[in-house]
Image (cartoon, rainbow, N blue to C red):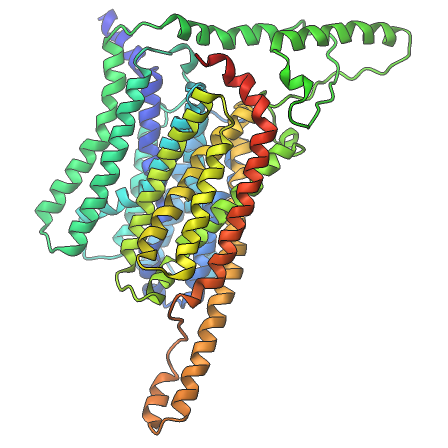
Length: 591
């Protein structure tokens, strides 16, 4: 009996169990990607026009990205409480929207509906924060793959939830809103005590590489499977029994990774001597950093230029120099010649809080490169429907689903490739970010010129590049500015996403599209004016102006391509500035 109890405790404290549970939570954290399926129901039920629906979309984007509260509360509340808060927000926000849409609650003003959408979608920020904070701390030596996989499942959440909704097969179209309100909340509440830091740096095993390989295989199979199912269900007429089989296979694929913590619980997997060295390293660093509470600690001035002498020093050498400086300054202070400060600003690679990070050039380079890269990618995602229509495609939802899957693969692949850069070559992780942004620049050119197959190739390139941002940026932020305040740092960086979308999509893309549509409408009216058919003119005047052809988005995506090139330059600057930091973090691990 005692042995069974010990096995259960070991299983519940296994970092791979936490990782798998976080993957499941992230699968429910993609409710923002379902807005395209929810908005038509809201529009028809409440008689909204497109401008009003667009305002709901802005509220959704803000709710999905504004996570200051989640980040700050992560330092005050236990992580399970944060998940509970997010689940309640999700349930209340979308649950109330469902009541209004179905007529079970009175119709509310538009601004209140925007607030409800914001509250419901903002629950995602709690799911993301807890999953990332827990797993980054549990896998400190594998941040790239961990962040990539978790953010990948968040990106694929829309496709997963859509397939689950197909299983319901309800004639009431508003039932998808009910599923969004109830489903994720139930899953998160069921797992909220599992996802937490469990001292993962002490659980390094020989099988870790094979475990990650299994997770990657599941991710690739899952993406390919959903792509195939999407095409089959779209192009053929299948009965409900086949849909049930498809959904059952989906659940099996999602459950397969649980075999990793089960196997580790019942097996004795030894550590290698190298892993023992990695295991003791954090403890040694803590010992080096520990000091007498009455010891005087003096402020240091960190050189912001890359290659600074402070970054080249090891932790022990740096501590030795600090002690020497303390001794000299203490003597001078005793003589009244110097004023002592009792705090030390952290160096890159150590733990920063948000206020300390905000005065660092590297942090703002991360922010701006994310704003330019992800903002231009989100512009494509938000305008896929109008883009495909302008180029003559009828089934626009296919491209929405495709870019969701490429987004998923970009997140998983971005984490994997960036991890190779830092592990095998001790090269800064942002080098993979520069490559992703270069790929996006090419994708924008395909959209701009409307070349043959532009929608297919463009969604592939933009989806991969956009997704890679959300695997690389959080991992790089945790390496450069630590994990102690990671929740606040991450949620500040995510503000770049709606900021870029607001300017690039809400201002640039919409203005250029409307201008081109107006030009085409004027040309069309001139033709009608010279026509002898007054009836045709009368019928056409009620049509909303639409733009056709690649000219609708030509200027927009030329600008977006240029912005991605600027992002490549910023990422390259960041690579140069942080090369010494990454050599210090990972150079000693190279064989």
